[in-house]
Amino acid sequence: MLKIAKYPEQILRQTAKPISDFNDDLKALADEMAEVMYKDDGIGLAAPQVSKSMRLIVVGTSRGKYRVYVNPEITFFSKDKGRSEEGCLSLPQIFGWVTRAKKIHVKYQDLEGNVYKEKLKGLESIVLQHELDHLNGILFIDRAEKISKGRELLDSLKAKLDEK
Image (cartoon, rainbow, N blue to C red; front, side, top):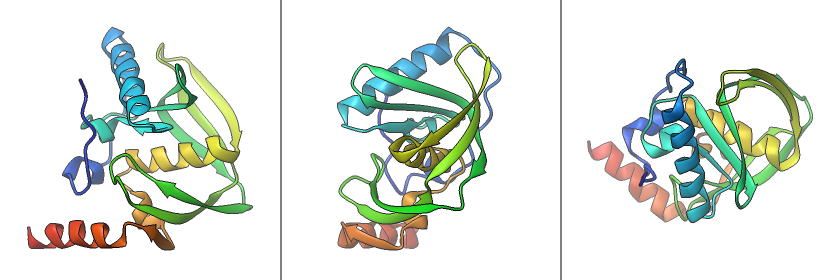
């Protein structure tokens, strides 16, 4: 079973590698990632969060149904922004206010390697921006204007990082 990588694990700060092999292992990984995401009450999970340096994201807002984004890239961000409170499975018990584009256009591949383009808004847009940040070694705490819950915990994790 996959395990969630927790901040300050190094993999969370690395840029994930593009996927070129569209095989059964990739499908199995996506299924397993979705299982882990639902088990931890998440709505999105990026491969680096399970210690895999791959450009793979699963997003699911209702149990059992999830979308897979392989090698996703955002091609458009709306100028219209929205602010919402975000959390992360890799930073349990920490939440912060983040401003993101309300609408995005994304280009990605499915598990077969087919290319798709999609327009997203609302929660799906926020989740995909958050997860895509993971593929680039960026965490929501890097974008948060204010940490709303878990400030002491975050400070102690950062202090441990500084000790290294």
